[in-house]
Image (cartoon, rainbow, N blue to C red; front, side, top):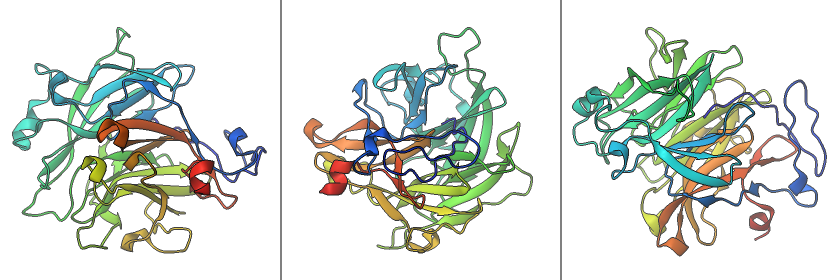
Length: 349
């Protein structure tokens, strides 16, 4: 996700929130009731763990996601849209001939690449991706770069930049998957990552390499000790209106209509935390406001990413026998600056 800085802040019903310098978002759908706006998507939506890039005058909308075993050697899948509504599959990041072989040698048994993230810095797009197998924390996060996201551009092409961070069951109580990049107020890049084991980790990076600074070690910023499994993953940190918002996916993923995934959020005034929910509970110990969960035929929403006011995620569609599908919502915000991901109808239920 490009994660360009956006000033959103508190939005009064039907009004413009003029909060400091920066982009101001208006919520016309919230003129009567608060609530997120669910976009009406169509086309190829078979997407898991989406990384969203909202369209601008310079480029279309893009979603990068977990690779399809049957397509492009299981590399991260790429979908494109001109309007954010109608989506098409435009290929994978690599094929069987161009894949980074070190990944497959380092993590035996991987069939497809998981949960990528995309971030633009100084004219270069950085693609972070996860290599692992189910139930193991023998994992790696790799990096590729490209000057453009447009597959039709003559300059398009992904360059292998190698390993970013890894985890080994013999030495590490964390899992090096689910990367998400954010810049702090000083422009320093950080990567949140992690799944189960030691929970959500944060590590400082540096530009232009996009890799950890010398001597940097991961620190834990969120956990889910309830139930004893630390079922928390898919973190995304966003710098919005003076706060760092931490979005996470919790509980059981990848079980079709039996999934219990949900999305929770907290915030901090410093990138390193502590992250707390609206009740003051720390996300370092089970805290976090649930902002989206199963509703009707939308089962187990999660694997979220945020860009420029929009939250993308996957869910399991009960009407499609549990097939995962892409969804995108434009968030609303409470007057004291907490994200609202449910629609007005969902909030009324």
